[in-house]
Image (cartoon, rainbow, N blue to C red; front, side, top):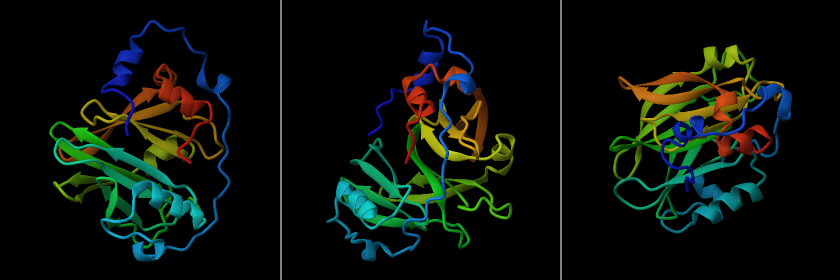
Length: 242
């Protein structure tokens, strides 16, 4: 479950905290060797996922036991209905959706045959709506395959594809993207995208992701300022989504 309160960054940015040194001078470099454990892309049934039966924790442990890498997850309680969870991993063309702690269905990602890699997931409210963000990139970082952020709208009992946004320009300005994370649970205030460059150095700029006019928009935020929040600090000092 999301532990961060709504608009946590707004509180933190005005807190009377000690000024932090420049990010690059104090935080570690966290490299990301290419993960090539299990690159197969089995169907949900082959992963042991049974609708209404397989539990969220059981499924996560099952992915790891099968040698899948880069396992990421999130859980959120929409305004109506019970707990919704999502689970994904490197090279998997699907995001697995759970309702009430049990497997419900899987979303096939529109990647055009690219095996998704280095994924980040976040379920967040957006006014009365609930949306899912799914970030992925090409495992080989080839120019022909752009890093992408997808959004899905919650329709009461399932997620429906809403937008597809290339992160090519944003990632190029930051000299690559590894270890991405999406932090926060309210798209109205903004979900924060933090990451490291291709060599593992913390991005000096993070980005608030919001929805405007039916599209995802990005607002730059100095990572130094965002680090006044404990969750960003934990990420900066080596805790990653993997």
